[in-house]
Structures are given as structure tokens and as C-alpha cells.
Image (tube, rainbow, N blue to C red; front, side, top):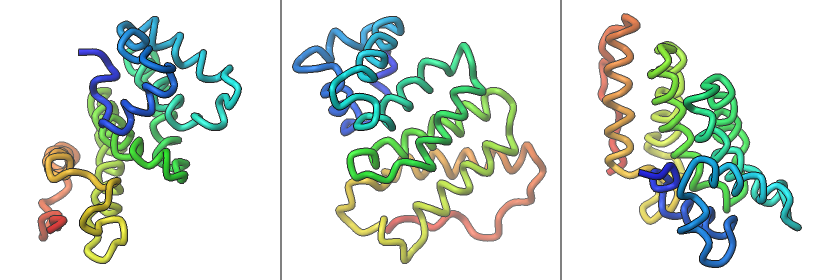
Length: 170
């Protein structure tokens, strides 16, 4: 599976725009080609400022195996700095990948904090982000993954079971 296939559909569309007309299918076949795509995105006329968040997310994906600390920093940047409407589809992916990466490198406490922040952000009953039809909310499956991850991390780091389960979006 190509790294770009793990992105949500809106993010893949954005990647397609980064690559240029129709070049997406060829542009992200290998890690080397993904690196070329990121570098080309930085030098385009609109350049890095227009596609900053998406390019940083792609760099984080590239760095996961070779430099996990740098990847963690880039995922955190996406989570904290994505504010433009065009960048919102990347936040959920960044949360999921960040928590997974932190867990895989043994940073269970940090991973738990990321998962807790995600669940607080996206499961607040009165949150405007959770209106039905909101394009930028996590799916039930994504919420379930994070809830399961939270339970697993709490068991590992010795946090007693939560009194209440994570609230659902319904």
C-alpha cells in the first residue's frame, strides 16, 4: 500500500492538486517519488505557504521510519496549526498517525495525551465541530480506534479505567 493511500479522500484530492493534473497516480508510487512531490510543492509559484500543512503531513509520513522524532514534531505541527478550511481534512489523519507512531516507539504517556486530546476535541456533545453533515469530523470507526487505543494505553501506563466511556457522536 502506498503511503498516499492511507490519507483520507479529501487529502488525496489535495495531494492530486499538489502533483499536478493527473500526475497523482504516478507521483506517489514510491517514497522517492513522494519526496520529489514534496520538494516540488515547496517551489511552486504558490509554493510552501499555500500547501504548508499538507506538505508537512507528507514529510511526517516520510520520516516515520527514518526519524520518528521529526515525524512526531511535524504531526504535532499539523494538529496545532491547521486552521484554514483547506487544511482541516489533515487534522484527523495527523492525530491518528501521531498517536500510532508514539505508541509504536514506546511513548505511551505522550500517545495517551494525544488520544485524550483527540477524543476531547471531537466528542464534546456541544461542540460545533460535531454537527451532522460536518465534513471534517472523524468517522465512527476513527473514534472507535482512538477509544480502543486510549483503553490499551491506560492499561499500559496504569491509569484506572475511566468511569464513563467516550461519548459517541450520535
